[in-house]
Length: 400
Ligand code: NAD
Ligand code: MG
Image (cartoon, rainbow, N blue to C red):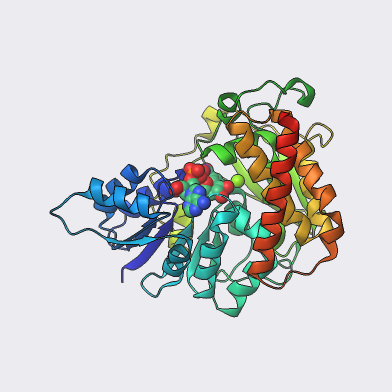
């Protein structure tokens, strides 16, 4: 049987890798829907190549552009417009698999809708889980959805944990596990001191040594806020207490992460740094699919290095651990403030080293709200908005 797949954020780095893997298996998968926020020309090309039935764009203007570029002649896919249409498409009964590859908390409603519809959810959009971990995992459980982590570290950990052919939401750590060990490349500034980084440019920050990714996650990888988001993500995905999640610097990005067991065994997953491996794993699970990724030549790699991260030099990683220990309100605030700060940095409105100052300022301002309970997605979205507003103010004050 051919499974129908919806790719949210199909024009992004993960979206494009997903379409590459899908195209290798026309006997197993067909595309139901694609979505993009910009780059409509690429969306048109993708819709043609995949014969998608539905495309979702953010505005009427984008829909018009899509129609113009599509032209007359061949029947156009159904065009849907706006964030509500995106969530409805993610949850509709026309696809069995949803790749959640939108960047940022903007992807949360659609990813959640896919979980609520009980689908197989391939989750790349880590910000959704950071902002709404408990709600998201509860929706997976309550609706019998399958959650396959696509972030390479979490996909590696998933592969290293015992499972029984189904990817459900655990409520406690897997038996016998002592620790999850997330690897981090250390990004482009691994060998530089934090205090020397205030003049770095967006181009320098986005030049990741091992991975080719979207600009937001590239900056996060440079500051290591990405690893902080991943620690929070691991906490929710694997029901693991913060103290049993650690980070090790591994510049070659060959070991994608590890699981340490109580008997002293450490199980790792290795491979080339190419997201098509975790994507193929998520699509095929529990079977393995060809992904187009080449062989890992360990002899050519020669050596693999590991070292301890220095939290004194990595303020964004330190703030992430603190947010996780403070609770969900702090995690929403951390993520939202970072999204604003990174956008400001990428548009030359904020210096690189001010990114953690913005996050810390917002966390400080929202400390009083930290005991608040989160009952639903509206609570998350309201807190997210408040944190964004506060972050904008801090960015503005820094630019004066
Ligand atoms: P990207 O910037 O390359 O692509 C983002 C996609 O989301 C695009 O299709 C864009 O049009 C769409 N989008 C952006 N803003 C949107 C909005 N407000 N509403 C709807 N759609 C919107 O990003 P990426 O590198 O592909 O990353 C996607 C997600 O996957 C992120 O959460 C990232 O952290 C995660 N991830 C990426 C990688 C990687 O190698 N790129 C690895 C692990 C995890
Ligand atoms: Mg990752």
